[in-house]
Amino acid sequence: MTLEIKNELGSIDIAIDVIANIAGGAVVESYGVVGMASKHQVRDGFAELLGKENYSRGVIVENNDGLLDVDLYIIVGYGVKISEVANNIQTSVKYRLEKTFGLTINTINIHVQGVRMINTDE
Image (cartoon, rainbow, N blue to C red; front, top):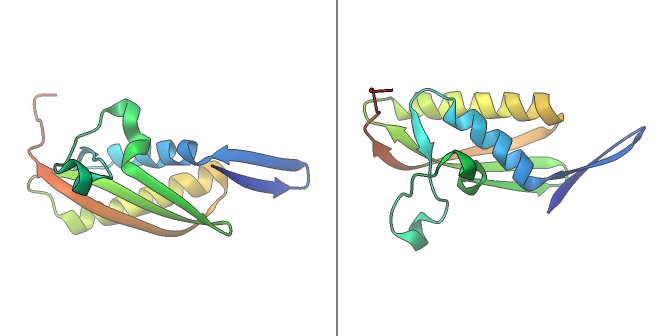
């Protein structure tokens, strides 16, 4: 599935997976996030922590007539204020997608799938 952007020079097709990877990259750079989680937790039965190569698996992007709805499935660190982490993620992802692609973001929904200890050894 692709998102088509038209301008005076022609059209650009952007794969939804590319948008999801950019959004996922912005999420894991945010403070308090341990990683991305599987969006199919109900089916899987547990919060699967995804590696760097799987950013898009924790992101669902829907195109509604040029407005994007983004759902992010995350695992946060123990002891962080979840509402602040979620707010920072929403701001960061919106900024990154708007600046990178020039897209209009309708909603960014955060789904916290678990809480884990933050590894302080790194």
